[in-house]
Each structure stands twice: as C-alpha cells, then as structure tokens.
Length: 567
Image (cartoon, rainbow, N blue to C red):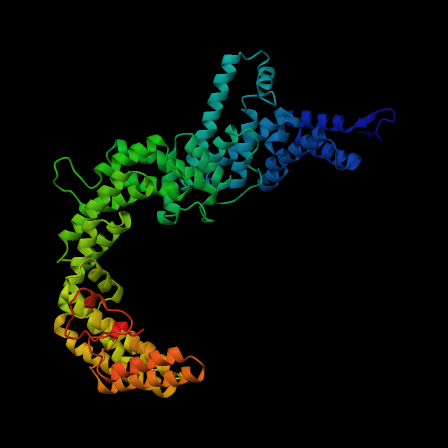
C-alpha cells in the first residue's frame, strides 16, 4: 500500500513507512511528531486492510491516548493479545509500563479498564513463547545479548511484580478470588488464547466466572473458590447443576467440594465431609472410588466420639441420610440408618410422638417392610386407638390385617363403617336413591364382618333393617330378579324378617309368571319351588340344588336354612 509524497515529488510514501516513522518517533519520545504521522496515515490510506498495519496503528493510538491520560480510549484501541504480535514491541512495552504506573496511583484499585489493559499487555510480553521478541528488545537496549537463564529469571521477576501489584489492588478493593484481577491475570497467562478484553470494565470481574472458578481449582485454590462462592450464595441447598445461577461454576464447584470433602475426612470432620460430598453430587459430580471410600468412612463415624461421650443421634441420622443418598448401593449404610432411626423412634416414643413417627416412617422408606419400624408405627396406632384420636381408615385397616386380634382396631373400623352407613344420603341432584341404599347396605355389611362380638348384634340389626328397606325399594321400582339377587347375597337369612321373606317369595313367584310367558316352564317351576320353600320357612331337609357343606358333613347350625342352595 503506497501513495505520493507531496513534499518530495520522487518519493513514494507507504503505509509501512509512515507507521515505522511514527513508531521511531514515539520511542524517541518525539510525541509531537507521532500524531501528525498517524493523521497522514489515516488521510492517505484510510482503514488499512492488512493485519500488521492495522494493529501497529491501533497500538500507537492506544499509547498516545494513555499518554494524554485518556485511559478508556487507550483500552478501546488496544488489540487483543493474539493480535499484539503485529505491533512494535517497544511501543507495547512503553504502554504496558504506563499501565502499571497508572494502577500504582492512589485510588486506582477499581480502575478495571486499566487493569484489563495491563493484563493483556504484560501477558503478551511475558509469554513463554515470546511472540513479540521482548527478550530481543531487552538485548537490543542493553546493547548486549541477555543470556537465556537471565532472561527467564527476569521474566519470572516481572511476572511476580505484576501479580503482587494486582493482588494488592484486589485486597484494597475487597474483591474475592472469583472477581480478583490477580485471578484474571493468571488465567490470561495460562490460557493459550486471549481471555481478558482490554475494554472490559465489568465490576464483577474481568473474566467469566466459570473460567475463574476452573482456574482456582486447577491451581489448588479450592478453598478460595468455595469461600468466595459461599459468600455470594450462602444457601448451598440451591447449588444444583440445573440452576441458571450456578450452571457456569457447577463443575469447578463440584470438584472443589469433593476435594475438600476428602480433606475433611482426613481431619475427622465427618459431618462437614458428608455435606461437601452431598453438595458436590447436587452439582452433578459422581463420586469416584476414593471419594466413595471416604464417604463410607465418614458414615461409619458421623455423630460418634471415640469415648462414646457426646454422641449425637440427631447428627448421626442426618449424616447417615446423606451417606445413604450418596451410596445407595451400599447395604451397610442402609442397614445402619434404619437401625438408628428405629432406635431413636423408640427413644422418643412418649416424649415426642411426632418425631418418633417420622423416624419409623423414614426407616420404612429406607428399608421397606422392616419389622421393627413397622412395629413402631403400629404401636403408635394402638396408642391412638386407645386415646380415641382421629385416624385414617387405611392405617387402621392395615393394622387389623397385620394384627387380626387387635380388638380396638376391629371396633374402630366397625363403628366407622356403621357411621358412614347412617350418614349416607343421596346427592342433591341424584334421581336414583337406590345407589344410596345399596351403599348403606354395603357399609353395614363391612361393619358386620369387622365388628367384634360385643358390637356385632347392634350392627347386625342395622344391616337387617337396611336390607329390608332396599328389598322393598327394589320390589317397587325394579325387577323381581333384582330382589332375588339381593336375597342371594346372603345378607339376611330367611326367618329373620317376615316382611323380607314375603318380599323374596313374591319376587320368585312374579319371576315364575314372567318365565311362563316367555316360554320357560322349567325356569318357572324352579322359581315356584324356591317361593314355596321360603314361604314354608326353608326347613333344613330337602335342599333344592345340592346339600350345603354342613349337610355333607352331617353338621347343621341353628340358623342353617339352606339359603345357600337357592341359586
């Protein structure tokens, strides 16, 4: 790229030549010449389309802005670290020194844009690969080669000075490890590509949180990471891999927590160790073999002391619960957690019934069907029955299934079903009151089956009355077969209610007439026989359709009417 020099007709002006003159003038501190040369470059060639000239022009503009005290403009003009290799190293060094002087001034501990500029420039100059040949520049200025070992010593010394300055500014500003300029500086130096943007002035940090967190873990600073992150987000229960606020740092946090968990196991801090492992798991971390061994060791010891004094059952249960979630495949943890829950459930059975129930219920969650835990809950149910507390039907029914001899449970269920039957009423918009009557019969039948001997007679009378009312209702509104089907359910034996017997007898006779009209004389005959037997009180002899089991064995009870033989 070239143009005509208007001062000397035969001289050709190139973009490279103008920039070279500007760079030499800058390094000779002839700053009054630099800006006109850059202006001429802009006028002659406009925006350069080559990387070398554009980057050289940009760094000169940044250096001039910094010299004029316009640091925001300097940061805007400075190229990324990848592009600084095109710029003159002497100019880059001059600007880099100026940034450190600027940051050393009083009150510059929050000047993020200048800090970003310093980090980018010094990371380029002190890069191990030395892309700008800073080593060569120093040799040129000393007018003698700098030996490799001296260069490496000088490079490390300069790196340390930058680190110390940035750390001091972090301390003054109260920045944590995630937002620290020192962390951004270390990441920029370690990362193969550029990370810090020179014009970035984000008050939360010069680099993304995820990069900062990962760097801290890789460099053994997990405690710094966890301290900083816990201060920002105290509620560790919300630290999950799917939470938007924690997704960026989830992996690094999980690694840090798992590492600290192992440290705490070695220090016999069992509860804290299990808590760390648990939070790491929330963040998506799967425990490795060594971490699982550490978690198991913590589970064995949590809540216990060497002497036995000061043992804490509550802490032990909490710790075992965490270990159970971490090690679901380890049956020893499940067994110990179940046993501890049962022990503590028994211990506070009377003093804290609610907690006792929770302990037994949790034990059943961990080990379904555990007899000791089930027994504990059943004992609470028995105590509730004795006190007359409000109970759930399913709970009492379950207790009675497990303990058929539990009279209080049997009485409670019988009273419950009988009470439901007495209060059963049709829905306001129900046209068919038959459903309500059948529901009442069903409930009273259940009550009769369950009720103990002391209450069976009273409930039996209520059932007989309900069955009679339903039979009469069916006689008036339904078919004879509906009445007969009710009779065959054996809810009330013949001979108990004359009215019921008459209703059933009439149903058989009416169905016999229907069968005759339908051309079924055999069916009609059978119905008439049944009606006659019911009308005659169903004597035991002469069962119509085969003997009952009692008849086959030669044993008949006082109420054996042969009803089971009628269809």
